[in-house]
Length: 189
Image 1: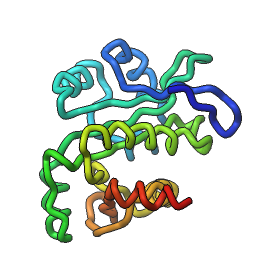
Image 2: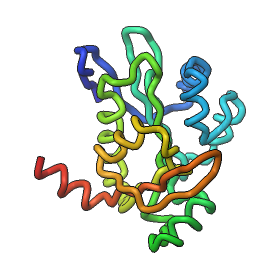
Image 3: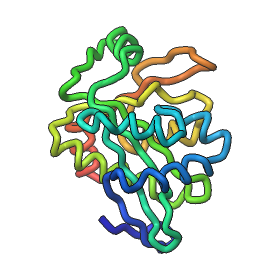
Image 4: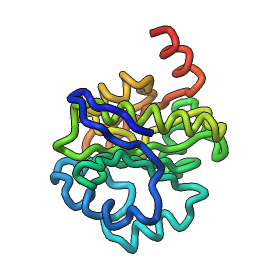
């Protein structure tokens, strides 16, 4: 899918393929230290990424790609189901998770491409794919660091709500998006 950024650059949104691994490694290695610290669903080496996507039935990668510079500029991961530590917390808040209809979400955008609407457009592209797969709820993979105001705002602007707090390397929020509620909210805008 071709989109246009806020500054009129053309970017393609699509599912990650095995042909993208070298480009994905380049993307991950060029994130700044702060972004790397906040995005860590898998190690940043080729073997780990290959192993991660070997089980493509539960891990789905999505990218925003600039053909102009021939680079991945945003990368998001969906995990069908959840991590057990996320499930324990979500259940304690009254949200027992379902491995078939819930998923975990971990997004990232290259540092120089942040603020141009790519993350929002990629998320809506992913959300359409998730609805087609019967996903009912999306949780944040490992939560979001409470001091990451920009990320918290991004999630809230995309329909996520805070359902709990926990401490791991500082205070974090667990957030959830109910897909059907998201559809109704955004249809009324």
